[in-house]
Length: 206
Image (cartoon, rainbow, N blue to C red; front, side):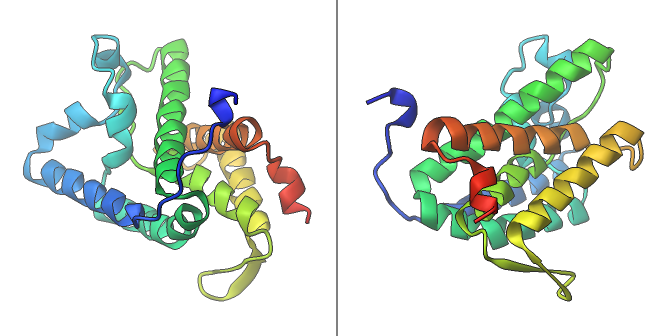
């Protein structure tokens, strides 16, 4: 069997709670030791000096309480269902690969544009991939935006992605890593095509 498609043994260990805990611990470390952010965020100039661990650690670092709150809330809502469907081992692999590659793509763009001092942090790249997975696995699920507006999960995910693309192209909402969000979505889509042989678009249309 192709190693890219070899399934992992199914287990459900509520890994999402451990990931949330890791994010909270890193954020507390950032709050107590502000210089810690330079070690865990993804900063292109430092990556070029060999700090390659930042491709992984950046997704556990956050810039504010609201930043980590909204990301962890999204991970809790969507991540548990995706982990239950994938299994904990597959979910961890998916989460880390999509988040890390979203960071790598962002790094490439930063280097191309000479933005050596950019500071990238947050779980949003991986979170966009998790939301994509939720919509692909549960295309009929209804999500209530602000607790009021009902949208099918694929409509919500595609709508958010379209907004991120608009913000990225127009340069509005500066200070938000729109490219990383889009990259997480794109890598998640490729993961489904290559590893699961599932076309998310076909699942959305079901």
